[in-house]
Amino acid sequence: MDIIIDIVNTRDPFEKEFHQAVTEVAKSVKPVLDKNPEYRHAGIVERMIEPERMIQFRIPWVDDRGIVRVNRGFRIQMNSAIGPYKGGLRFHPSVNLSIMKFLAFEQTFKNALTTLPIGGGKGGSDFDPKGKSDNEVMRFCQSFMSELFRHIGPDTDIPAGDIGVGAREIGYLFGMCKKLKNEFTSVLTGKSLNWGGSLIRPEATGYGAVFFAKEMLATRKESITGKVCLVSGSGNVAQYTVEKLNQMGAKVVVLSDTSGYIYDEKGIDEAKLQYVMYLKNVKRGRIKEYAQKYPESVYTARNAGSGHNPLWNHKADCAFPSATQNEINAKDAQNLINNGVYVVSEGANMPTTPEGVDIFLDNKILYAPGKAANAGGVAVSGLEMSQNAMKIKWPREEVETKLMAIMKSIHEACLSASQEYGTPGNYVNGANIAGFIKVADAMMDQGVV
Ligand code: NDP
Ligand code: 2IT
Image (cartoon, rainbow, N blue to C red; front, side, top):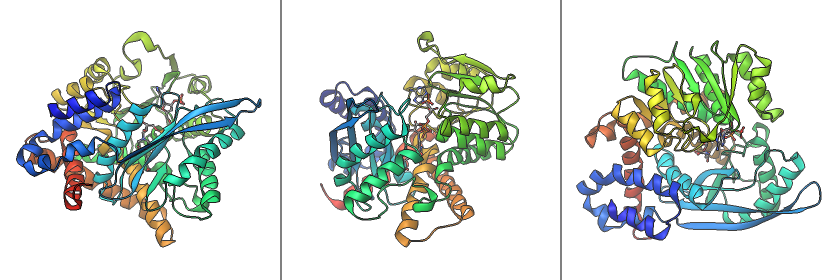
């Protein structure tokens, strides 16, 4: 394990998010390597931490005032042992190589857990869609795709959405890619329903995170019904997490965005959720406006310097962090425990710091890491690719049933790997080990490539 940490420290000394993700996996898989020395001899981990290919490119575009702007684009093609590279695109000003690499690394294990034949990748840009006109977003997407198109394809690399990339951006990206390639193929997922998208793809990540929580609660013979839940973020994942929790009889009392969060003791019911969807997806406004519309709720502005996020300091049973990486630190994790939270299902990728994770594990709560709990999104992306390849469209119920079955099987795989390697109920070890073995075995079969 120390050798692996040394390699990333020496090669990529400043990539802190990538180090964080690698360190966690390296710790979890140590007993697997001890039991199966052939993985060490074949340099499996050394190869897994080095992307197969990284593409970085210039994205020039012209804003509405006629000024030339330049952003940076990335695509990390991390691992193709079990299928073509697959993973989202993130457009956010914080995007850098470390964040892209941590996401691509996590994606490789997540995709392996889905049971589908998809490898790991991730991409994006430091472009900020906030405050940009539709035309600016379109011109940016077209410029981004004018380079990316030569690196992707339905059997090579299939991007999708992530933070800042939703239906609008996927539409513009697909339009340009189709034009440049002169073919209509499944080169992106998360497409709109009338031109190749899958039913339930928009819902899949949030629904999946709730299904995973349901499976964890079932191990204690409990259900979601009646549970009070904290959900962070208010984008794609958060919205459909709230929708499914409401359908299952739970109550969600918080939602957030980068500026702050709202607390609504009465619960964010279906009608209020419809308003959030309008506010965020159509009006592209701020969550603060929720408190103006529903005076029974309270808005608290973000205080980044406070050392903790008050959103996690409310009485509840379950938490679904669904905004971004490292949004729960040790203090937040302890606040959650002190407030009675005993189920954490991560909709976001790596939302909990290593110190926070240790607090969850020490308290033996039902804690599912993102690579297991949020795998429903990419799983339905895989189902979108299958439907496109077969040129058919499955009904809503069929896709949701398949999603439910996939989340159940991920839960079982994590649990059984955690048991086999001596840490029963530790979903962090379980997810890392189960994902690792699947990718490692494929790499062993395919030789040193
Ligand atoms: P969206 O862009 O739809 O929503 C992101 C939400 O998180 C927004 O409310 C945004 O606030 C908030 N947010 C983003 N960055 C920060 C930040 N630095 N600090 C505080 N809040 C922030 O993205 P998604 O819902 O798609 O993604 C949310 C998380 O889920 C990400 O970690 C993503 O990687 C993960 N994920 C997404 C999947 C998908 O299918 N979309 C699949 C699996 C995981 P604001 O409105 O102010 O921007
Ligand atoms: O983090 C993720 O799993 C995603 N953003 C979804 C990726 C996908 O290919 O659907």
